[in-house]
Length: 300
Image: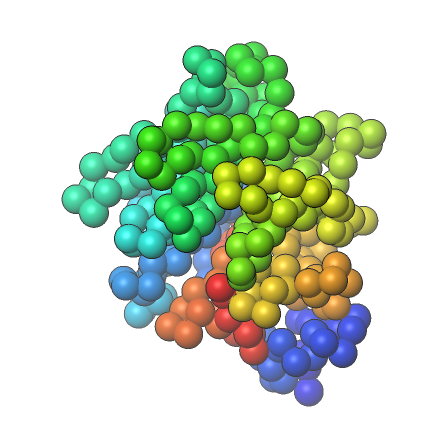
């Protein structure tokens, strides 16, 4: 019997969740929790608390929470690359930065065509080592999550960092506010949320799916539209289902774009990621708190 934490809209969702499983609250006390990233080798999760200018760490072995880094240049999205290194988007520094194994930090991206980035938001790595990230203006729109400043680029794009040369290339130029992003399991598609709605009802609040052709994105289409709040961060499971944040919790969309279910969260959700020993635990950043729930599926 499913608990009230789940809502099933399509029979396919019932096969992705367990009966008698509840959403666990792991921590509360953030102002805007974002960017969860799970380190499998050390069994801990790192996430950002953007307005408090800190990164937090939850230890899976004992449930303890500590400050991972402060100040944190108003960090937002994080990911762990295939060498186990942390890659972070920083609003205030307006950079994408990699933390090396020895604790030193390497700036991967700070400019495009000689102009400073706006405020990198979310980031993923492709299996070829390329880094893909979004660059909306949230960190320079106000002082709350960064430093207010005019955009040097004058627009908000999606970028790819070449793994060989380190060059930063714009791969999508037609987004209002590109936000969360994730590859399909076979990396044939890249899903990108557009949260332009935050700056006016005339702008999008949907997820687009784009075909990946080497270092280019082609054949853009609207994959899903949001009617409660906005999509923000998202992840894809091994079956190709898209798990995305929204105003009513974490929504699950089948690969064909059908909304099949909902994980109810009592706060607006910003982002999520898969983790745990079997990668079958979904960690959820919901405004002031960190949540987690076990699922009958696993992350890619």
